[in-house]
Image: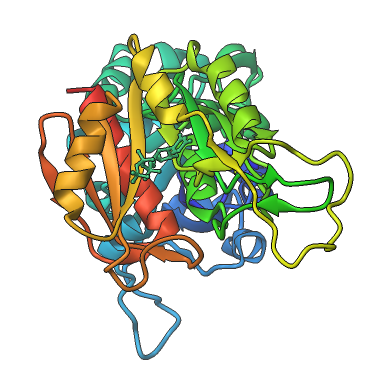
Length: 403
Ligand code: CTP
């Protein structure tokens, strides 16, 4: 799945011959799963029709402050357009439009939208080679870059003038991959490896029975998704669950028992920057596992149980530079018990779920959590979806590891 999937892309087209290529560019954005709206300079309509772009983008195309042909003229709100956009991509970016952008000129809807947009801006210059090299054009590039706008460099080749040199707009495929790579490179967890445990564990009694619990694995999978969406490489060690993920940055490592989860967690721990242990690991397991199915010949059956290894505590014991996060599900004296667990298991952060909170815990789609860090700072959150809790947790971790 492309990193631009689901993003709102505002394509700004200015009047260069490369505008004809924006039909392909819109198609590629749409194919990548983005939502596309187009804002054009009036002159660019000479190079490609709004109808083409509106058909491909499945949205109206804007070029003026009011729709002239409409008797009940409606104002095209540049502020709304700017706020709608997650990304503003200017392609082709002519010398004229770049110069206006660099100097705050605002004499058309496109430029007013540029000034209103708060999102990242990319610009793909397209012009003749001497214009591209001109000091005033170079000054525009530098000024726009100093605003944080990102330049997608032009390439060399045959130009509309017949001259050969630098100034050709990057090809639509290259514009899309440039933007994708740029976003990926800037993700806050790019280059970080994260270990996550999720789901229940099953402890065998005999070949057909086990001791388990009702954990759905949802919380752990949401944390894995949120971490991967922020650029981390995730090792997701999961007990038996119906949850699925196909994210390319999540390596799913299925296990059944606490012992297997312990082994997988230890295998990856030394290579990770962050470990988040959200699994509901069975605390006890049958001391002996019957080789054959146990027959119900007696009126009662007694199973002797022994403790499983505490994975979280064992990782706390050997911790070097890892940021270690544990979960605590408490019913009474919650904050004190969680603080105690944080210290005992040598954690950096503990996520407290209180069973007294409605909507928190194992099975549902929501959770209500409190974070306690190693300095005992307490942050309490409202009831939220597990996906939102996952994002809160990762934002907290990013804030702490960058502090
Ligand atoms: N955990 C673990 N391995 C275990 C048991 C728990 O890694 N064998 C982890 C869970 O993934 C979770 C945290 O420890 O992050 C939860 O601990 P919990 O079972 O609530 O606490 P305990 O320390 O076992 O204390 P108690 O049962 O007394 O509440």
